[in-house]
Amino acid sequence: MAILIVSIGMLAMAGLLGNATRFGKTAEFRAIATLLASDMADRMRANFGAPAGAVYAKVTPSILAKGIPAAADCVNPDVCTQTEMAAQDVAAWEAALFKALPSGTGYISANTDYNLFDVWVIWRETDADSAAAAGVGKDGCPPHFSVEGAPRCMHFRVGL
Image 1: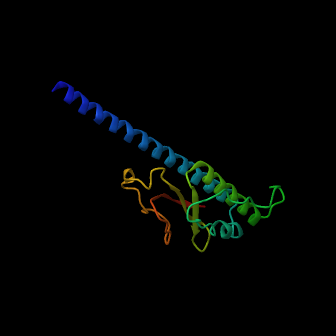
Image 2: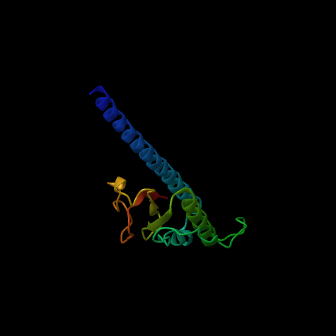
Image 3: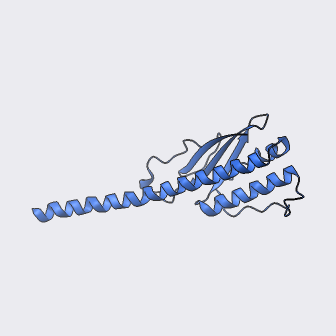
């Protein structure tokens, strides 16, 4: 009887260890998403204006990223126009999202004055297609965003 009770306790501890590992990875992805959204907010604040705002607001999610996005053409930041710098910021941000998060991508929308932006960071949970991903869904994803499976979306509002 004692062996039965101890073995049930050991199985419960193994289950807890598995959940702790999975939730630890989710917390890591959330921290990375927050840092990358903050990075984009800083880039937008440094390059403030309607021409750049129009470029930032055109960032749309590719269903979920399948490869590193192409880099922008402007290689010398000292002579870039505001829109070229914004395109370079977007390309660097999308590449960072793809490299740091599983199938990571982003979406940005803005109001008509380009002084208030909504930034979404989107990625696929590593176990999103398994039963262990309960509670992961499209809540918090951008409007009209559709993808099969269970993406994780984090929304940030950025005022310039």
